[in-house]
Length: 235
Image (cartoon, rainbow, N blue to C red):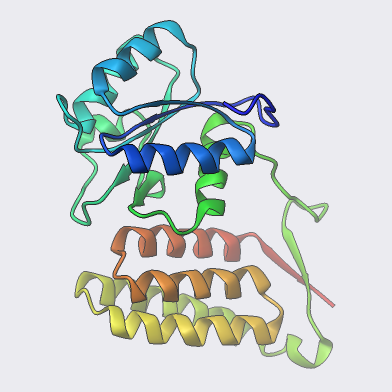
């Protein structure tokens, strides 16, 4: 550990691949989290018996347990512990008992992680310590639109809804090429209207489609939907 903890969040990283635990620990410590790492699931359980922790980032394929069994055991030791799944399996689905622990699709990250900012956001949300930006008095995200463009915004928002529906349909068909094309258009159109966060998410969806990361695409589309619901347009 680096001794300079900028965040009061303690994280356990569990993965049987040493290069994964080393790399992930380095990124997390650079961010300022206090990190405990284990390549052995039994060692990880020993840490949990002796250290109060906030978050566990867990691989699904471990040396003795599968990751789901490990998380259930960890929950018994520390009922307040929150979990993030870090897996190389694109076919991983969330069992009911994992959903009962509060794990959602937004908490699943495929190896290798390319977007650490999203990981940091999930960590701080799950730990209940992330800052929420609420710039408008109504609790909405305020976007200032050029009066010339304002009349076109309702049509733009309907187009965004259509894009999200289309992406979901193509995702069921695993047609990543079409998703990539839609995301590219989404990114460009959002930037034109000043919806910068939507444009950024469009770029992230495009990158995820290029790498055929279905779980990440679903997570990003959910983020885009939530963002658009919070938007308030002003001149």
